[in-house]
Length: 125
Image (cartoon, rainbow, N blue to C red; front, side, top):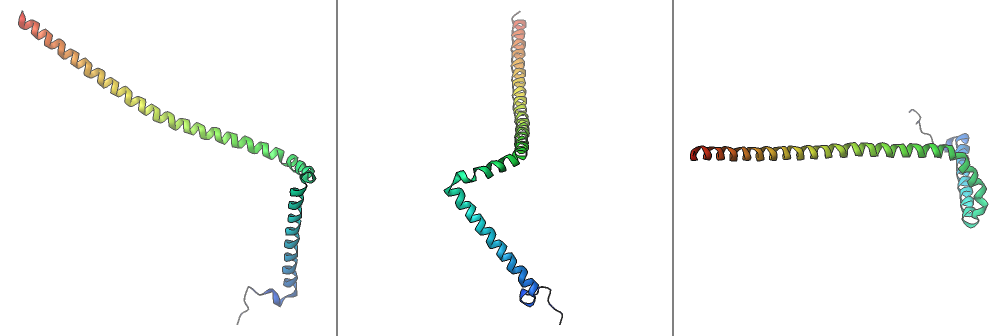
């Protein structure tokens, strides 16, 4: 029978040391994180120097990020304005067509009245 590809770490001393080292590093990282959290909560001024250094280190990236965020908002607003203008143009086009039809109807009505008046005058003459 062929050996399995996923052997348990119990068969190899090197694998056991690797797992143990991973657990030690994970525990040390968790402990360090808890200590830093407690220090920042109980003595905030103690962390002001590292916080300032971190802010200074990421300031150029933060400025670039702010520029990109502002430009993307401007782009989104431009697209919204374009779509809004398209809807507004369509509404205005319909309004102009309706006004033109109303003017045509009014002109036809007046032409009809003039024709009737002319016929009446011819009939009276």
